[in-house]
Length: 84
Image (tube, rainbow, N blue to C red; front, top):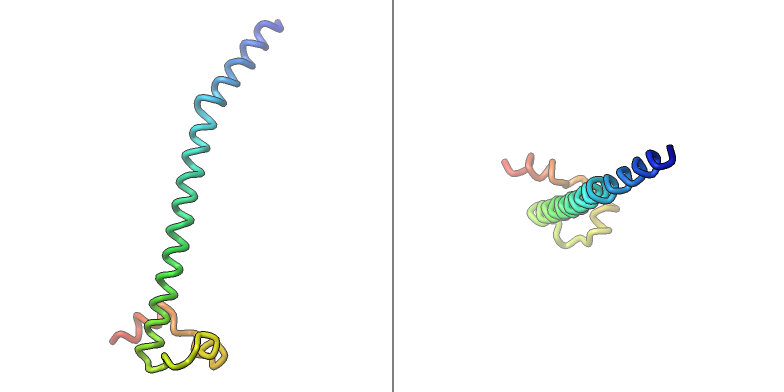
């Protein structure tokens, strides 16, 4: 009986080492790449917002000043609306 349990345990260990761990490693790599893409997408969106503020003639304001004056709503969505 213990021989059968040892064999099952060995099979489970081999399955874990040969299948489960490599799959988890690949998934974590993919998640890291996707995270970096989302960070880059956010940064590009912020740059579009800053460029839109500059196009509106507000470039003489610092970023904090623009936020304090309630002009920080020039985001990517409003940038696309104001291109007309």
